[in-house]
Image (cartoon, rainbow, N blue to C red; front, side):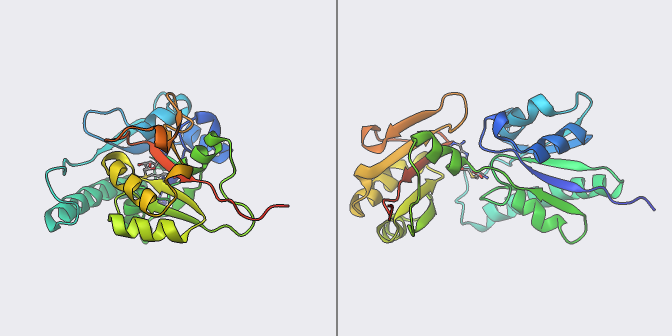
Length: 243
Ligand SMILES: C[S@@+](CC[C@H](N)C(=O)[O-])C[C@H]1O[C@@H](n2cnc3c(N)ncnc32)[C@H](O)[C@@H]1O
């Protein structure tokens, strides 16, 4: 019987390929099969971070998200469409592993931090050998780009998804010392309102494309209203105890 090949969830870091771990790079340089998510018609962001270290002969499996924008994210048809997509993708990766191939799944940032990879991991972990390679997250690159530490002493850090309702955002923002808000996009105006209501708007920064080409660091109060790039993060630095 052929031994099953290991499936790797390869954390690639926040964008700059120099911020990738040695282990991630070693696996990338070795595997013959690589899989990655991408939007239909796009090259795939994770693939572009990994490109310089991939074997020329590597076999690629692009997992293209189904178009679901016309469906509400909390509806059954939306969930079913995505579940079918993850099931089919996992079945393909399982077959490769059962044939004895090592497979790398490319993940922007850390694989276990709000990543699509986790949906494959849940489907594969009980039947296949799978190893996850951790990585620097986008938020770490974002607060580093601001040139200020995010937490001091016993500061509490809260990470929020901008997709939450405004009142939930406001409640969590009021309660925390330091803050990271991910998934800004079309949620920008709602997040700004929540920050204003919680009294932290004036201390907030926005970082677009942290550690990538086009990185921008802006005081939130200098940013105009409207949709923001997918790769945007808002941070409020803690002001805790220090000698
Ligand atoms: C699906 S989550 C993936 C998070 C990723 N696994 C990580 O470890 O950072 C995508 C969100 O992460 C944030 N993000 C990730 N990397 C980023 C970067 N380099 N610059 C700005 N935002 C980033 C954005 O808020 C984006 O909407």
